[in-house]
Length: 202
Image 1: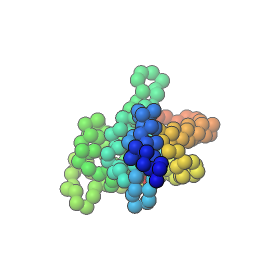
Image 2: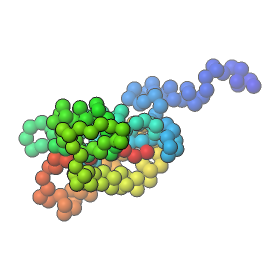
Image 3: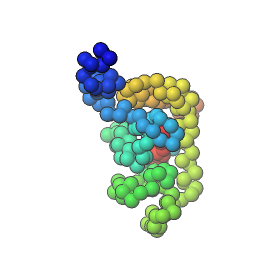
Image 4: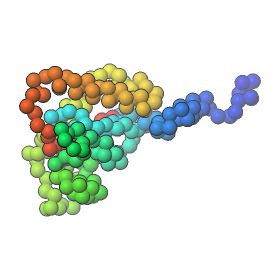
């Protein structure tokens, strides 16, 4: 009772969160933690190339919808070229029905990216952007990449309190994947892909 009487009235947990937010301005208010159908945790949004190599990743709270992080994760793609500026836009993009909304299709059409996203049942069909099932089957590479990332225990079970530290662990795992690919036989004679896949994982 004595300690509570002289307390400021603010929960200690809230004060600790405010202290970390003041120290790290880039840290989100909710620390990228939220409750979804899978439980309480974080969700990462991933873009890979046609071979399944991760290109960009972002972290959000578990209840955050995929479409809200589509543009930030797409704008984070930077593929170095031998000459000129880094490449930022693929020739085509495949995603699941979570990315099927009008503004995403308009954004892709504005950037001259071919859309490979199945439509929802309540959406009107558009012959200008027909869905190709054969191309959509190639989207499995992003699911394989997500499965590989979840094999890293520190990613499957988030130990970091701060979202920026958790994002750093994800990028460290991406670097490990690049090193494995660079030292493998697949790396020789590969040309830059025109495909990109997008997905998310809770």
